Length: 349
Ligand code: NAD
Ligand code: UD1
Image (cartoon, rainbow, N blue to C red; front, side):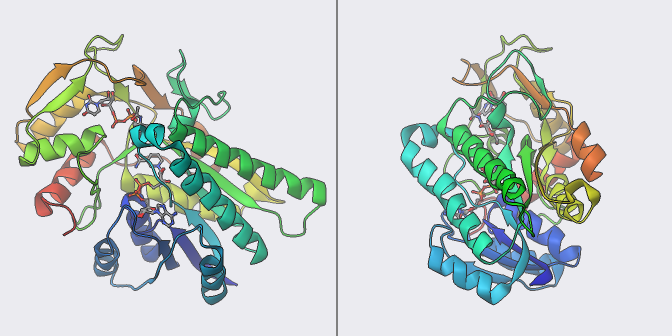
């Protein structure tokens, strides 16, 4: 087993490609497995240009057990960061089985192959969406889970499976127990400061920041602000936005923690990755206009079904146990989003 090698599923995607940059720059070797269902290989070519280092790439589906087994045999990683998954909430409501098969079944295959290869360190991309709707707006990790759509439930199911896997180690007194970090992301935005990699959504974006950026560049005509009658400081929804580079640094901190006392004897632990404070939709628009000098054409529209008024992380546990906190502010997030959008108006082509 190569202690320095990390296998990254979904590494060609938005967050995965940024993770590859940070891993390579931190001295890790990287092997990526991605079926390119929602990404382009160009992202990994840019990762290699940014870092001046190379990585291995396998175009494969994580549900293909034989392919994964062969990749593990070739690469001998010590750790897996598991980003591969489908992530569109609306689509998950239309096609729940597709989401459960890809996300839940895909993860089952992955952990089976890991167990067979005796690779027991896993960082998993979970989401704040596992907390679901509630009257509470600042979440700690012990808050009861209650996802409200199939995408969110697929993340909750995977968390449950991984907790059960880790609990079984205690019963079986396993010699090499699982070390698993469930990282619950709040709202990742921004891009690498080079502007060479960034978020390249398929079709019309669902999320706020890529939508704003595409309006500013002229690809989309107008942003709909979903509701200005929420009980928030300006009536629009408040979210905890986190720079994607800060987010991926949290993954490296989790890998480092696997070697510390925190994970001694094996554990499966959830951590919120967020800033701990939120910004409203109007604050995002205003900051975008100030930082970029572009105007963002918008109109107030009805609320979007399933949206919360306000949602942000309590990130204290990640600070205490992973020694991680965000370093970048909203201006950085906006400037880096714009730098990427401006340099790549049509995304990766
Ligand atoms: P993304 O779509 O850009 O990246 C996911 C990657 O996984 C893509 O490259 C896709 O081709 C690949 N993939 C999907 N299914 C696969 C399969 N069966 N086999 C192999 N590869 C597969 O998404 P992202 O924004 O980078 O998100 C990464 C992870 O983080 C996802 O699991 C997502 O659910 C989670 N997450 C994202 C957000 C967010 O706002 N972006 C928030 C919370 C959690
Ligand atoms: C959405 C997903 C959530 C996922 C998260 C991560 C839904 C219901 N939730 O959350 O499961 O984990 O993305 O990326 O899709 N907004 C507008 N106009 C737009 C788009 C968004 O006003 O065109 C508002 C929303 O109402 C919200 C804020 O902007 O108040 C952020 O929205 P978005 O970027 O979609 O993130 P979430 O709603 O937090």
